[in-house]
Amino acid sequence: MSILRIALQKSGRLSESSLALIKECGIDFQNGTGKLKSEASNFPAEFLFLRDDDIPGYVADGVADIGIIGENVMVEKNQEVRLIERLGFSKCRLSVAVPKGKEYKGLQDLQGIDIATSYPRILSNFLQKHQISARIHEISGSVEIAPSIGLAEAICDIVSSGSTLMSNGLKEVEVVFHSEAVLIGNPNISTEKQKILEKLLFRIHAVQNAKK
Ligand code: PRT
Ligand code: ZN
View 1 (cartoon, rainbow, N blue to C red):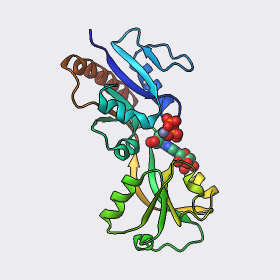
View 2 (spheres, protein in one colour; view 1 turned 30 degrees about the vertical axis):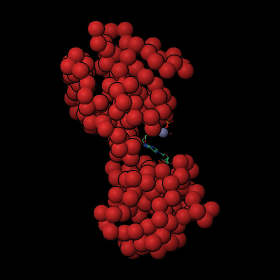
View 3 (cartoon, helix red, strand yellow; view 1 turned 120 degrees about the vertical axis):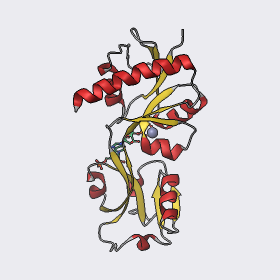
View 4 (cartoon, helix red, strand yellow; view 1 turned 90 degrees about the horizontal axis):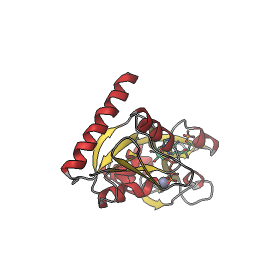
């Protein structure tokens, strides 16, 4: 008997809604604190709880068959996974921001400057598309303090309400990418697992339709 291995974020901005979706699909499992793995009691699935950044790699390698992550992470990691479905939660955008007092007239103002980000691939694709060359500094966290410590003149980071930018004296000037939670999958799963996935998708669609 095959079981579908589903990777979910262990704790963070995707976890609660991901777990809620699974629950709404009528799938029960034990989710004790600190548990890294859990088998469903009434559906042929097993859950792995991971850092979101690791999920695309695990799905590409086939350690997990499917997973839920932000589309921003899916694109940035550039692993061989397929986008099965956009899920409509954890919506946010990846934007360029500059210090509030800095004059900004358009993309040309980014030419030749230093930009700090945790999303070098998405940013560099965006800049290339607009024929802007800037120096990208990859940092893994607290990106919004980069301008005030003199590391960069601009940043490119995830924005939701915009209050983090504001409280760091920054203003949003360009939206680079729109993101929401997505279901990704290994492109080569077995026919048996594909059947389980279809059952799961059927339930996900029912949950989504009920919310419309
Ligand atoms: O520990 P792990 O590595 O698993 O988690 P993480 O810390 O890397 O990610 P997490 O949980 O913060 O975010 C997971 C995903 O949620 C992201 O990849 C996005 O797809 C999505 N998401 C939605 C967000 C936000 N909204 C968001 N607001 N991710 C991050 N933020 C940050 C943003 O960078 C800012 O610093 O939250 C801060 C507040 O945002 P404002 O604009 O509302 O102030
Ligand atoms: Zn992460």
